[in-house]
Image (cartoon, rainbow, N blue to C red; front, side):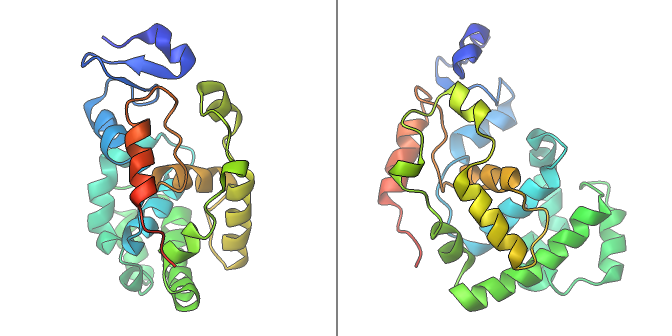
Length: 215
């Protein structure tokens, strides 16, 4: 059983004896996501597009719901190849609305198609989505001195996520509010928000140190 009392500090010690961030609990698929994906730096454009789209679909829902439907989303949206998604038409919208394996929200589906077109424009201007998003990486002066439970709970968005959100919206993107963008930043490794004491934190920091920033 996990150390529930430790949840007050943001850490839970699981049955394997490892201390982790509180949010995956003991769910195996959530634990695997926390341990192997969350915060790992990403530079692949299709993966970045997938992540920001799925964060948009998550709005109003739990991330676990989206995670458990992720393979269905990938199948439905051509593995989030934004060149293909941008070509979707009304027939595709209806196909997606009938797909019980994904979140059938017309606004979010149409947003994903729209954002695919905007992603193509962004790549044409900046060279890649990775170069664009990593250009916003916050410096140490813009990060908390200690990443702990109170800090994370008190800051669902940051100055950086607000800047990215505003810039994306100016470019025509939708479902990219600052809270959604911050969740995306955490997931794709633009910041390391594993709580101090989580066994993943130092591993992610080492990956970030060796990661070659796109330019």
